[in-house]
Amino acid sequence: MTKKRVGIMGGTFNPIHLGHLLIAESAYEAFDLDEILFIPCGKSHLKEDVLDAKTRISMIGEAIEDNPHFALSTIEVEREGYSYSYETIAELKAKNPHVEYYFIVGADSLMYMDNWMKPEGIFNEVTVLVASRKGTSVEELNKKIDELKAKYEKADIRVLPISNTDISSSEIRERVKEGKSIRYMVHYKVIEFINKNHIYSKEND
Image (cartoon, rainbow, N blue to C red; front, side, top):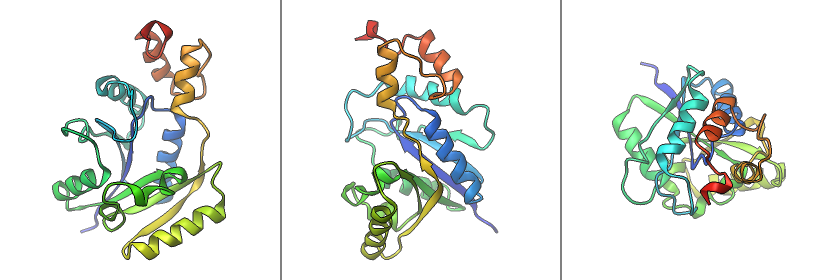
C-alpha cells in the first residue's frame, strides 16, 4: 500500500500571507504530495504578543478554502502549554501510521533548528523541505544541511525549487497599523477579514 504524502506547514501565521501559500504549493507540486496541512501554533515559546488562536485559524481558513489540497489542523492549538514541533510530529505519526510526512521550513528556520526542543524528533522522523531565503546564501544553506545530516543520522533534507519570499507577517501588521495597503501580500479574503474585524489596526492597541 502506497503511503499518503502530507506536507506540514507550521507557524504562528500572524497573519498567513502569500509567501506561506507559495511555498506550500511549491512543496505540493515538487514532491508529489497529496496534501499540505497548515498547523498554527498554540502558545509559542519563541514569540510573544501573538494574536489569539481563534482569529489566526479563521484567517488560515479564509486563505486556503479555495485550494482542494490545503487543509487546516488545530492539533497544536488544542494542546496545553507551549507548542513544540517534535511533539506534533510524534502525535501525527501515531494517529496516522499510513502517512509519510514532510516538514516545510524556510532557510532562516533551518539555520537554528538544531537549537529547537528535541530536534532529533524532527530530523529522524520526517523529510525536511527547505525554501531558500534572501539573507541566507546557497553556500550557507548547503553547509548547514551537511552539518545537520552529519549530526542526525536519519536526516533527509531537501531544498525546494522556490525562494522563500520576502513577505513577512510583521511587515504586514505594521502596514495595517499605518493604514497602508497589503494587497498582493495577503490573500484577498484575509484582507477582507482583517478590515472587517479591525485586526492589527491602531484602535486595537
